[in-house]
Structures are given as structure tokens and as C-alpha cells.
Image: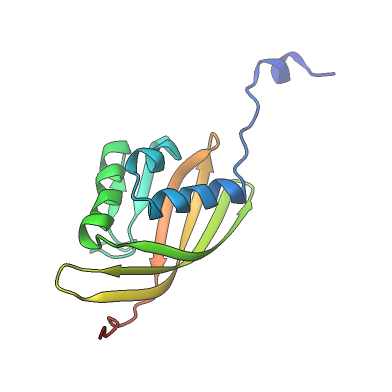
Length: 139
């Protein structure tokens, strides 16, 4: 039988590997509204590159939204391929191959991981890491 405190406490929302697979699919569809539906109200995104110790940090929903869109602005054909995901409690990891071409024709293909912290069944922190591989020569 539940105690009064357990009866008033909301059920803990769990995040699954399927949740991370769907998040990855939203990235590949370049669907910003779908991506933001996965994010907690108070979210943070640490990009793979930038001037700070953790890359470039975007804090808050509007900043995270802009940071996510920057990926597609920099790499209009950006794709995250061959995803593998796991979740352990309030943490998770997605491993994939990032592939994208900049406007100047520079192409990147490199393995990467996103390390997640979850809160309330959503992503509170997305921390991206990517191998520092030289651009791929095309043609």
C-alpha cells in the first residue's frame, strides 16, 4: 500500500533507448520542433566545438533551440548515422557517425557521442563529443 507521500508524488518518467532513437531521428529529419519536445524546460546543450572547456554552451530553451539550428546552418546535409544508444537511470549515451558538408564543400565524417542527463522524462543536458578528424576529401 502506498503512503500518503507516495500517493501525491508524480510517477517518475523513464527515458528509454527508443526515446534516444526517436531523438536521433528528429535530428536526421532536421525537425527543430520535434527535437525541442524531447528537451526539459530548463535545458543545456554543450556543442562539440567552441571556445569553452565544454565547447560552446547554450543554456535555456531558446538558446538550445538556436544552438541546434546552428548545426543545420553549418552543415545543411547533416546526418547522424549508425546510432547506438543506452540509458542507465538518469544518464544516457548515443553513439553515431556524424556526416555533413559545409557551404565551402568541406565534408566531415567522424564518430561521436552525446552524453545525456535526464530530468522529468526529458533531456536536461546534451553534451556532444566528436572525434577531431580532418575533413574528408570528396571527388
